[in-house]
Length: 290
Ligand SMILES: C[S@@+](CC[C@H](N)C(=O)[O-])C[C@H]1O[C@@H](n2cnc3c(N)ncnc32)[C@H](O)[C@@H]1O
Image (cartoon, rainbow, N blue to C red; front, side, top):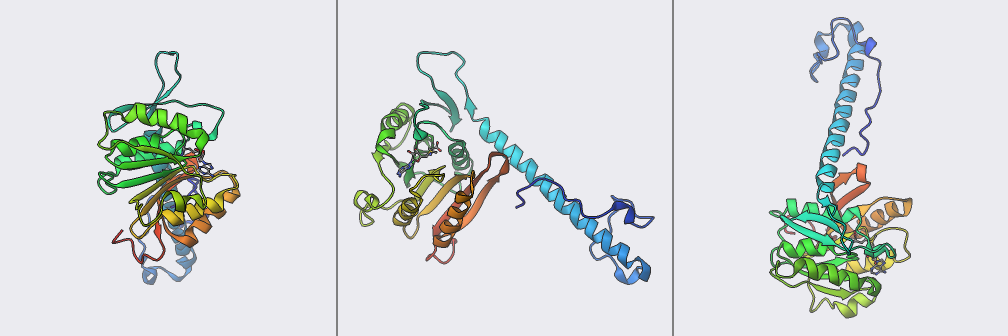
């Protein structure tokens, strides 16, 4: 998929021989045999021009898809019509209103757009990625939207983050899932790194899905995060990870991640600088059986 919607300029249209209009394109099997020798250069240029038009068309189409999808994702958000004593942001998923309390003093107490992207994907692809009765863990859950939406979609959710964030996370998760979900979600501490082995031994904890939104940025725990994914991702586990690109280290993290897991791009949203990936263990040979 092309990341830029900019059309490329690669040939001069006035080199097209007389008789050819710009929109009257020669077919790919451009009958070179029937073209007079002197026209071969022109034929080449026409082919090039045609390819450029096609690629710029693809670029335009990609841009349109990006814009359309980004619009649909952002439309999930609404603001309270009346300002009350409690501030919150509203989101609509599974036909329900979800109210998220944020606080500006912590990274994890603000909702990041990657979370919206992942939630939109989960809801609109629930036939293929059916969370009903599945064991799901979220890393760096922050304000909890992804955990809440997964619970509403029927998953048994373990929502994790750093200790400082848990109070607000628990509040949001409880307020938005109480009486609405098949399973009561568990909110618990998980600091990325060696602790994961004690808290979630592989013998007793198996997750069908690991969910993560915007957990990669300029923090010093990227190795620990990678190891945490590695520990939790067992034979049939799928990782769904929404990644916001800001700086170069984020690109190199994706490369390192790709060395360890099969990586598939599910969404590319240049307008939001976000990609959504699906990943699974490298020692699993194909994704057919995932
Ligand atoms: C940018 S926020 C994203 C929050 C949420 N996923 C979202 O998209 O709205 C990053 C999250 O990762 C958590 N985090 C950062 N370092 C962590 C670590 N070493 N162990 C566990 N969680 C961590 C933060 O507390 C925060 O909730």
